Image (cartoon, rainbow, N blue to C red):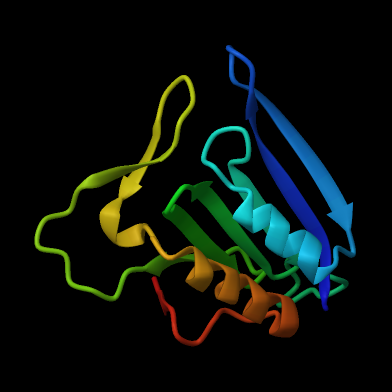
Length: 141
């Protein structure tokens, strides 16, 4: 396992106060549990960063997963400032906005950026945790 940091967070209480917790050198069971716990409200995001790796003079490669309940936004950063996101490979006739997270104002993204398969999201995270690279079966843009 080469993940050096797992940041998890979300929103609690009526005014949607943000909370965040960081785990250093998390185990795979801790990472997987954080992803499966995502609900788009109290548990809204999980970010994985590689340990002691700096590419192109930037930060560590990282994977970001937001949302929950069958609607996930997955992003990958190589550590050089460029971030790419999961794009659904199925053609979309009409682009719609999907509620990804609920809080005082809903967070919405375009439907082609939403992964609706939790098991695939977990496999994307596992691949990143093991290799530090974006999953090769994902359309990234």
